[in-house]
Image 1 (spheres, helix red, strand yellow):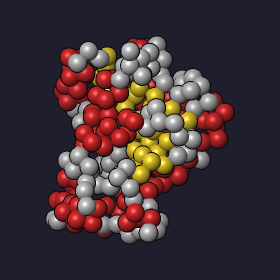
Image 2 (cartoon, helix red, strand yellow):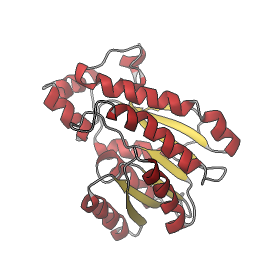
Image 3 (cartoon, one colour):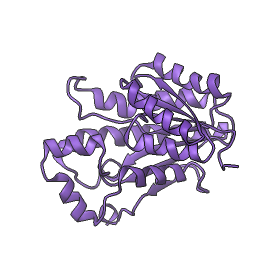
Image 4 (cartoon, one colour):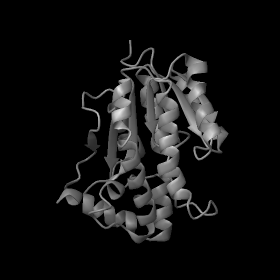
Length: 247
């Protein structure tokens, strides 16, 4: 018996990277998982196949989180496929991509996060949990300067966290807890890749400053832990510590 048997989770942006790693851990603990993707269906289907090969349950559901109709359909897909929605991991983020508009980072990292949470919460029962994934660079952006190339994304993610936290009293009324997981730059993510292109040497600099940067799999496991962690609503989990940012 897994700790998440009979539970259903949506992990946004889970066709690769941290989201995929998190989805696999949750499935391994018994949860039925909705693997969300924006465009790359084959990658999402591969994650589903890996989960099923390991004895888990999962489906792939496409959806652009900046489109409210897609958001609502994604939330309903969990209920239709597995009968409930108990866990929402808000992992999808972006803003360094080209060709998606100057306001894309804010639309995705703030507005879409709020829309997804609201759509999910309306279908969640008491005892459910929402986990928001962010970075130290975003969480502490108002007090600690970050790399120029990443600052717009960091500020949009901080705006998203702030907007989500404003919904905590509403979630409490529904019996839903909200937790934030914050980490340093993660090796192997698309954000790290784009940042390195924009500012060569940036990742090595962060690695030296932090002493260690988590891999996608390591960080995904930490995100998954917070789905069942005994912490109060509104808690922020600093993966690997955040001494440099808190000093």
